[in-house]
Image (cartoon, rainbow, N blue to C red):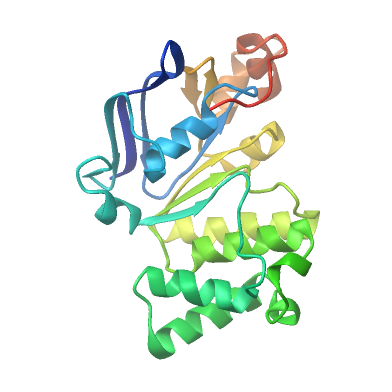
Length: 248
């Protein structure tokens, strides 16, 4: 089953083409890592998948729901963490999770259980009643991740999810995502950590200049590189030069 699909997806800003005809599917039960240099279009692709952006052309679907035609049904299946998560500064983590849970239709004791379970899972019990503005960057990232897990989504969309997390928290996140994919959820994540992509992803896509240049399992992609054996060599072969900062 396809959890997400891009069919000839284009995003243009006037003459600037940020994403050029992306065709890609993410399967239920898999982790798919989208890698590429800054400005490659990774965040743009996730923006289309979450409905934050509308495609200039093409179709984007979540579990068969067209984001342009049926956005609410599509978004209800998503757990999303952007590259720069925003938390309401004066709310606490517990208040934040309760609001997000209610937005996704949780209520009563079920909402209470889900909120407390995610606070425990991410080690947030000790800061659950502190204002978000008082938390460290890494702790705020954990709150953002807890929001994504709260309503048990079928598709996790994670833009650089490891940023700000210490090694222990990174390991926890990898373990939790593995638990969810074992139950049939899908994960689409972006990362600059090629070692992470090799470790956690069943498939990797290399996006350069808004175009998907390679897709496959990390081992097979790395085997075709020279010198063989490293996903990093594939990356440098396809995106050899430095680029400007991340664009749309």
